[in-house]
Amino acid sequence: MQILISNSSKEPIYEQIANQVKSSILAGELEEGAALPSIRQLAKDLHISVITTKRAYEELEKAGFIYSVVGKGSFVAEQNLEVIREKKLKVIEEQLSAVISNSREIGLSLEEMKELLDILYRE
Amino acid sequence: MEHVIDLHNVSKTYKDFSIPTMNLQVKQGYVTGLIGANGAGKSTTIKLMMNLIQPDAGDVKVFGQDYASHEKAIKERIGFVYDGNVFFEGLNLKDIKRIVGPAYKHWNDQLFYQYVEMFELPLKKPIKTFSKGMQMKASLAIALSHEAELIIMDEPTAGLDPVFRRELLDLLQDLMLDGKRTILFSTHITTDLERIADYIAFLNRGELVFNQTVHEVSETYALVKGGTDLLDRDTEKSFVHVQRAATGFEALTDNVNAVREVFGSSVMIERATLEDIMFYTKGRKSYA
Image (cartoon, rainbow over all chains, first blue to last red; front, side):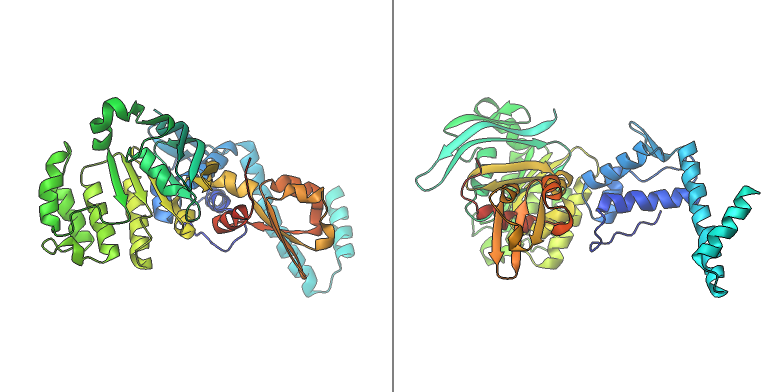
């Protein structure tokens, strides 16, 4: 599992970790049931405090991305509806970005794009 | 046992310095950093924890036991590293090991030689020829060789070069892997702490200002910058200390949410480093 921490980022370190683990899960790099490194091991590897990795895992647990078993560690959770929704939203965002860049290439304005979307959406 | 060290209503008065009443708990399995400017009471606090001095009033409990009846058992489980010469200056490390080793039930010769090698310490040179950093390493090697559960270090990084400082922090993180050990260290080099500490205990003029997780610290404290026209008796209440200049003010708050409410987006709010917190808090006379 690759995690890169920026010390100059405004985003707190625990959030950086949580977001990167989240992306790995959403991208399918971390599969359901996969074991995550222990809180203490991850702290050591990233040269940060134990309480920071603990907080990151807690956030991930709260959001339903992972679950923990006492004495065994933390694992990637079965994807729940919210997770799937987020996954889908991410895909949609990417697809829309492609639409936008295509539209820009031919000089289509935002208004024209909206109109087109309106028509297609109602069909 | 959640708290490895428990200072309860502890007070100590000297002619020129006093700790009025201190309540400080150190959590097991975590790294606690004790910070404060020179003269804030870091060393006195550590000496109280080590029973090198006794409080005028209050209780000091380590591993849930008190020193009066369990001193030997407590010390057996503590590794103490401190700034300054702990050993007889004329002795070399080998002699010291011969003297100190048998005093501990869990002394581990193999571990000792492992650390001596890792720290590149000469076994046969008298300690007095050691540099400050080497003395610290020697003290650390001895402390780590009796498998202590609690490691207390007074200014461990002070005499060390940046490379070994990093190595030391790495080593400490290694020790924390099994989750059974507890580390408490005092320092005024706060960048070290910001990397590995879980809890920060901040002392100012003999008083404990806070003992919080690093997250709680960064969620309550912040640096605020803005135009001096925004300041008045009411708005200033949200600050620990304000510094004014012709170009604007810079202030420390310990209630960042209140500042957001009062000033909204008219000020710049930045993360406060431990150094910022120490600097601005020192400017304030009393914390009560």
